[in-house]
Amino acid sequence: MLKKVKDAALSKGAKIAINAYIKEYGKMLKLNLDSKNKSITLEVLLEGEKEPLAVDVRRYELTEENGRHLLKIYGIHTSRAWINTVGASYLEGKAFEIPEEYAKMLKVIV
Image (cartoon, rainbow, N blue to C red; front, side):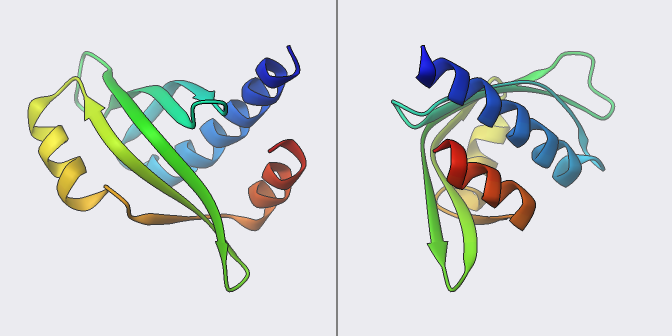
């Protein structure tokens, strides 16, 4: 039960952070994080699209390097074949910096 509460809180914070990051491209509608399996599922409505994009991240890692908090994602699969190719080429294993205010929250929750 505690893990579900933790995952829900982390999902909410991550949704806010990601929406700020992707605001030029669209809006995240749903985000579910599973800290036990280190996986993420989400839905994003991209600008100009009628149907949301479903995204499955099979594994994520949270790390800290030189005082920076980073998120790395692996095993990206989406509901659009061409985005799977882009994800594999440009997102797989790339480190995304987590803003400090959210990193503090992660330290408490994770």
